[in-house]
Length: 208
Image 1: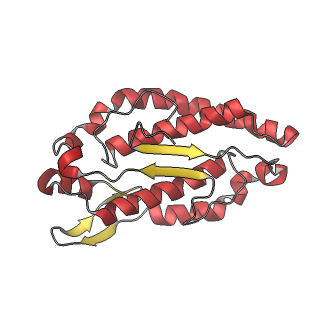
Image 2: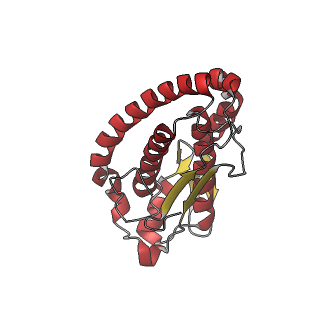
């Protein structure tokens, strides 16, 4: 895996013929794990540590406001907050990869399976500017426009791949790489603007 950017995503291309039956009914088969993911994501958590107590606001399950305030005022990113975000991102991406037909393996709540996602834990005082979290969401605006169209394209490619799998049992490799690239692009922008784990501006690229 490339080390050029501190947020990395790789998905193993399926070597075996994909299951046509579960592919056909994928949206229904995924309902139980989607319920689990939603139950985690649509919550607020009560937080309490040495420096900060009260409510940690959770947007979509991800801790955003609390790490922003800690970086801004304490130049800290508590490791357990980082680990929570990392594991939730990993889990949600396993579900996404499954829904996008990129794997037949039912999403695990803990094992990485065929989805290899890693985010480098930042040294806040050395690697992060304490003021940037206030404007990162704004600086990422050019990416939002591109991602909007890329996401639409990825949906159409997934529909085409759905038919390809039903008839051939295989996900065309070029389509597979494109969809993974779009998911990777989304992840890098999320990591920069909302997870706040890096100050390196996300590259305009589908690759790692």
